[in-house]
Image (cartoon, rainbow, N blue to C red):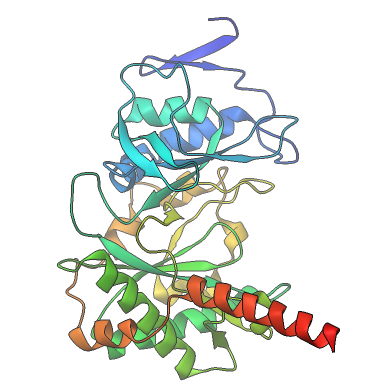
Length: 319
């Protein structure tokens, strides 16, 4: 293979000292080295979960890829999954070992997104409340909203771990057991609504951007087939910030930019703070699930509301 500069775990790595992608300010080697350094911590988070990856190439816009690349080595494991978007079966990569992770890194797969289920298992493994700050807001606003989420969880008898999203927000992840997808999705809606009620001037569950009024969006929609970026995964932004675990008592002292492919491994040392922070899987309280089933699914509600507003605008224009 031409252009091979190095081999690790049987994976031929090429163009390592070339720019990873446009405007990212890192080399491909920095991405590969980061994934190699966090292999023991990130592979357990990916194993058995059909992966969606976001890749970069110099001269091209970043793109999301779910179907395995053509010409993948025969040792790359995949899982057949139905794609609603393309209305066909696709084969998504399963990262169960170091060499598959390195193979993806060599393909310039920067972001690794996982669902809350494992192939062959009937129940979801967790839920997430994704906190998205308004444009231009300081990270301190997100921290305040995260503390509201923690209060809502405490009030429900639940516990979660928190990590930066690698972008502007944070993810509060709650491991769960013993509930079907519909009930986990419902509980997520209820916990988001409870968070909003604690301080409706700070937090909102409004799905439509124009309805958020400068508040932190508590996103409850990442259930079922939806994904979140895995802990320790980089994001496609200058310097490649990393989605990084933080302790609840550390929130006031961190900023998302503190954690990048250049710094993350050194900050970790020999620790795995995400594994350390993660509670044992929990049973969802029946009253939380029941409350959630009374709350409309945000995307569906937003779709109907968007159509209603367009009709109202047309009617007003016709008068």
